[in-house]
Structures are given as structure tokens and as C-alpha cells.
Image (cartoon, rainbow, N blue to C red; front, side, top):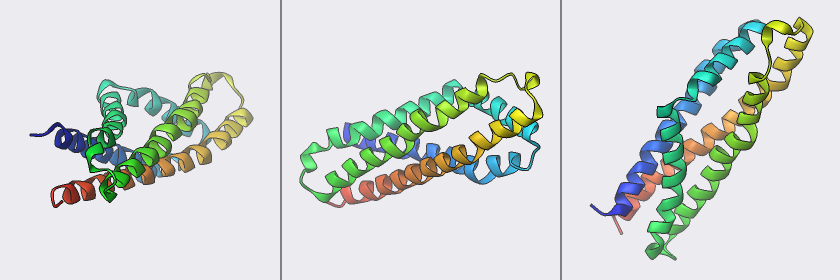
Length: 165
């Protein structure tokens, strides 16, 4: 089997898994904990943010970043075919919309929350902290969800197209 197909399959699987994670957070986790009181919401988010930083998550996240970057490099021989440009679009949109948003958006919000001892601040500060995190985090996660899902779909489409050209 050609390395190009293995990397493309890796990109499909890993972006699909990331899209599923982000989708689940957008459509089940965050709406569920959104119904909690301010303190309970922040405790739950703080706990989940700590737990998700596990080895399987990190492996899938980094495989998606690396494989999406390798797909156009390994398929440069397709240039100037439209499939090559689809690969470039996937690379840019995934790196900006999933990786970049995570790195420069969600992670700083998670770190802001992680530094707070929720037992030692007033209920007013807890309310303000939730207001400063919740909608921003949700909006950023929606971007990650759309970007990952779009990358996944385009990668599947490109696999079909590559095998028919």
C-alpha cells in the first residue's frame, strides 16, 4: 500500500475522531453542564479539561495535525489537479480552525480556569468567571467542530477522487 493512502487514511480517521469529540462537546457536554449553577459549571468544566488531556486524546490530536499536513506534501505530484488544492484547503482550514483555535483560543480559556481555586473566590467572581469563559469557549468550539467536520468530509471525498483519477 502506498504511503500516500496510509497518511490519507490516518488523516481521515483522526479528523473524524476530532470532529466527533468537538461535536459531542458542542451538542451534549456543554449544553448539559450549561444547566448547572455557576460554581458547579466551573467545577465540571475544570475537571473535564483536566481529564481530557490524556494520552489517547493527545495522540489523536497530534496525528490529525501531522497527517493533514503530510497529505498535500506526499501528494504534490497531483499538482495542479483540483484534488491537490482540496488538500491545501483542508490543511489551511484545519490548522487554523481546529489547531489554531485550540492553541490560541480554547487552551488559554482552559488555563485561565485551571489557575483558579474555585473554593476561594466569591460567588460574584464565580459568576463573572463563567461569563468570561462560557460563550467564548462555546463559540470557539463551534469553529473547531465545523473545521474538523469539513476536513473529514473533504478528506473522504478526496480519497474517492484520488482512486478515480
